[in-house]
Image (tube, rainbow, N blue to C red; front, side, top):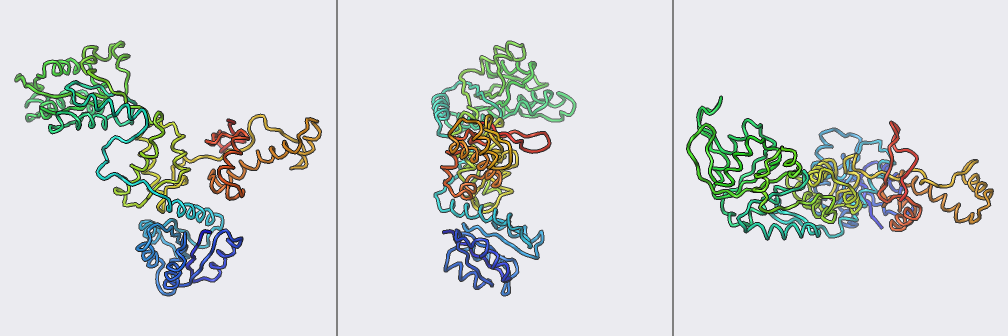
Length: 486
């Protein structure tokens, strides 16, 4: 049975918690002071702690820090009648699960405590550990990623140019770095140029450098990327956006390994391996006259395709944990793992923005979450699952009021099996209504119904509800009264 420790000097508050959990599903322990609260924390080792900010013998923040020093896993919720922005910031900055001001809304408090108990339960399970110094490694053990990694291993040692294809946000630069690190040029320089981010007028100078007076503002010699990267590897990202005029000069340097700076006559010899990436269909661009065919085939010494995230859903958990630990260092947070339900939500998302989209969502959720476990409720609003509402297409309807009207309808149509059909109709209304009450949280819904989460999911499948909670938004009115059936 979960244990809740409430430390508050108001008797009415302590009684309220005991009353709310009087049914016996949570054991409530109470204390009035910092010292008593710390003693009962040691004695009972509660799953969740509720602290008043102002106590007779000190501040709830003092007790909070003592609890954190012994166990950083315990979710701690603050409630206070004297809340300020500064104290709220202080509490959340140091890892409080939540912060509420009195009078506390009972329904909101119950939801927060349910989340806190769930977080405490999940914290008892094993967490994935980060790999030190692995911010730039290629992550993924799915079949498509294994095939891509094998291709990198085969191609990297060869002195050939490589064309890396893939949608935006799939990690093409990481593939380029992998090719470089496993090549015979790994001790030489590695430079990256985003051809789409530099104005056409400056891109040639960026690549080849320029002499003084080559154009307005060119007051001194500039050394370009090809010259800087001599003996190393040059990564040209978004090569499909390179202007045609520059493509001819690029072709010459790839063929002859020679070039001149802009405004100069001196021929410079270079030894550079080219890795190029694009999210465009270069064959289509060649046919349309927007990309030189001879340059395309020079770049295409070997080709590696980077799969979109939707084709490697098996890697999402590992990627999400990688970003979690990475952003823990950057943001100073202390998240340990994810609620399995949140990982299910991430795995069902189509990810049009690929890994870059996943990275942004994890970081934003960490900024607005609390505690040590990432919960579904922390996700940005568009990504939170919505509960199934209403009846599936083809559900029986009835006239009259409530259950009696339903029974009258079933008796009148003469089709028989009244018991089965009545129970099914009730379940079609009951399960979506409970999921709406819990804002789609299946764990809370199963507890409210008094059934296991597996039974809930099985019932939803049997009744024809999509488990991924597909829903429609009625114009200006929120979810409409239909749910897409499986």
